Image (cartoon, rainbow, N blue to C red):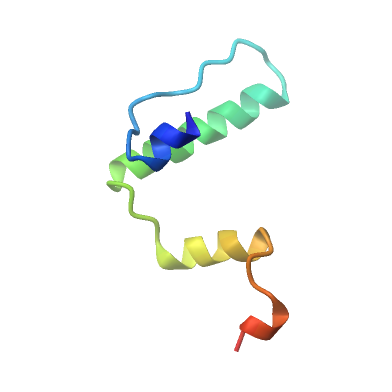
Length: 64
């Protein structure tokens, strides 16, 4: 699924029939995919930077 989305296919959604954390994760993932589809795959630069910062992509020495 993630490879399809990375390639620009925002038509598929995750389908999970449980009612636990995995369902919450799938719902959030589907919301994100829908948002990408509505915006033609464009993510605001600041959101991208925030995601990268949370994931540890920036080292302290790379931030000016």
